[in-house]
Image (cartoon, rainbow, N blue to C red; front, top):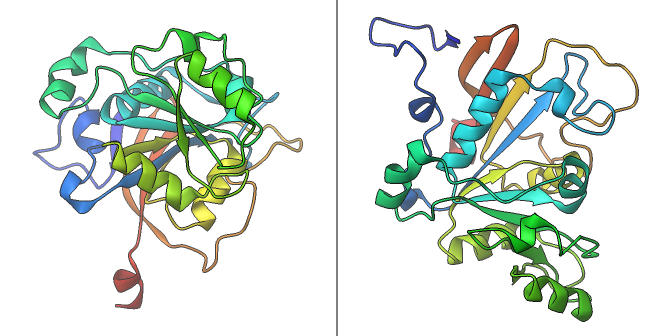
Length: 256
């Protein structure tokens, strides 16, 4: 893996230090939500319904690092079903770092669901060492909520109606001590979070493939007013895959 941006200098780590490259801001700055997505050259976020075909060994190394640095992984119910989500892993190489930072051994998986049409007998709920969180609205089905809690999930109400308010979801997770958040989509849910203005960073893998078809973009939902401006922080490359990191400009930076 090589660093393309910023241009490497004499002090640049070789091999690339992914923990340093993807470090979160200090906790004192408040909750911080980064998204991690993959896209083909022609803008597809999936191929045959999942992102697996667009990934690579290097992409999975970064995926593992981002999870190991996060307090919680935020993901939509559709992605949980399509990608076969399992509980977060405790990675031995990060155990000391996470313990020193007051984190659980593995990040919590925080599933966003309005209809609660999930398999609560799946390992994601029954075999998680860090309890899986279920983010839903106050109007969610009571029987489904009871089934989720019986399976070991922790229900977090993050909306007044049936759905989830993205800004409230971030606040509720932060209130639980989960301020370093990693959003893994899918495209519809990520678009909702971006439209709400709570996506602080985008880690985008650009895969060297063209897939055509009608696959969704990485954000496939409500539009973002503005649009929001992001600035590049780093670009890495391996085997033709580009691993980009963009941070959203603050209002003060945009108007400066």
